[in-house]
Amino acid sequence: MSYKWLEWAQRIQSISQAGLAFSNDAFDRERYEELQVISAEIMASHTKTDMQQIQDLFLEEKGYPTPKIDVRGVVFQDDQILLVKEIHDKKWALPGGFCEVGLSAAENVVKEIREESGYVVEPGKLLALMDMNKYASIPQAFHYYKLFIQCEISGGQPITGIETAEIGFFTENNLPELSVKRNTTEQIHILFEFNRNPHKKTWID
Image: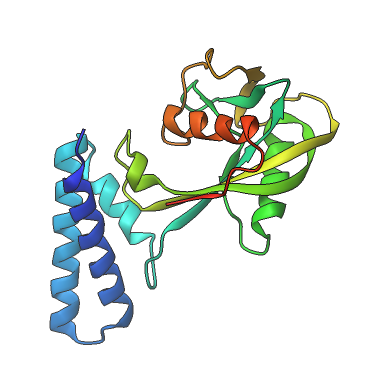
């Protein structure tokens, strides 16, 4: 499915946000605000989402726009991959989330895995850095980069967190219903390639 409209809407939003961040001219700011409304109209029309909700989301974004960074932990055990069931949508994902300011990507993934699954891990190889616009199963308002970091369990035990309902290990051919905003089936299959071939080069979109 093509989401060219999403690319246009994201670009319009990005231009408007940058303009509002740097322009002091009242007329220019009015034009940038109009662009922001147009972007919200496009997204609302194609996603059946309330336009005010989208505009409120845009208003929270300040400064020069850059892609948001989401880190995901990749833990293999006996040719199975660790997934957690999200309370929010009742679907499964690699443990992870947005990178927090003050923590490195590796520190973030260790924290997320511990909080969402109960396992203590040691971060290892960066397997992939993927542009979610290239795997857009579900349209999203902002542009995201996903970092997939392979980790080894060093301690802990399976315990659900405030965002997770279940924890499990799954084979490549027996995956549960995935939360595709967080990770797609295609991405999971790519990650299993690293489990079969540890010397595979890091995937960079």
